[in-house]
Amino acid sequence: MRAKVITFAAGTYDSEISDHTPIHTVLKWHSVDSCKSQIQTKARSVRKPHSSPPTLPSETLLDRLYIETINSIPIGKNNALAHLCGFTTSADSQSPLRVFTAGVCYNQSSPLVKAGAGIFFGPGSKFNASSRVPGPSLSPERAHTYAVWQAIKDFPRNRPLIIYTSPYVIKALTAHSERNTNIKWSRHPDFCVHVNSK
Image (cartoon, rainbow, N blue to C red; front, side, top):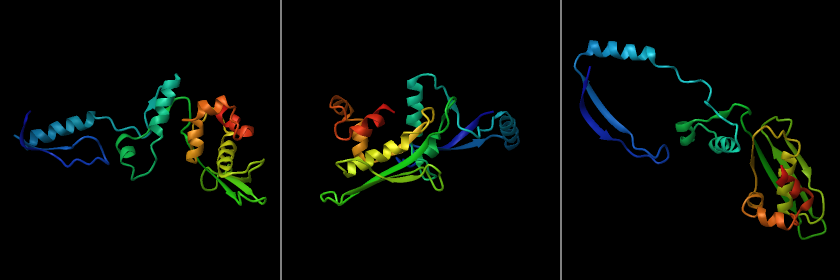
C-alpha cells in the first residue's frame, strides 16, 4: 500500500543536537483500515531497543581507543551528543571511572610554603583522599601532578579511568611528553616518571 506525500519540508537546523536537518513529511493513506493493519503488522516485527549499550570489540589498542573516545563525552541528561549517540561498552572492561584531581600551593615564595593534593571519585567514595604534597620545590604544578599520581598509583590497569586535572598536567603528558621524557622529567622526577609510565 502506498501513501501520498501531502507536505515535505526541512526542519530547523540545531547544531547543538545534530549536524543534520530534520525532515518533516505528512502522508495521506488511501485507506485508514488497511493502514492500521499494516502498522500493527510492522509493530510486531520491530525489535525493542536494547536496555544496555551495544558492545564493541576491544581486542586491539585501536578498538579500545575508539571506545575511550566515544565514552569521553560528558555524561548528562542535557548533553545533546550523548542523547543522540548514546554510549558503548567493551566486552572485556568495565565502564570508565571518573576522577577529579586538584592541587594547591600556599605561600609559594616564602619559607612557610605548603602544598596539598586532593582526589575525588564521587560522593562517599572510599578512594576520595587529600594529602600534603611531599618534597622540595613545592608549586601548584607539583601539587597537581602529585594529585594525579595519587589517583592512579593503586588503580587497576584493566579499568578505564578518565582523569580531570589541570592544563599543566595534560600538556606535560601529551604535547610536551617527548621533551619531558628526554630531560627525564626533571621538574618533578620523583613521581612524574611514574605518572607517565602508568
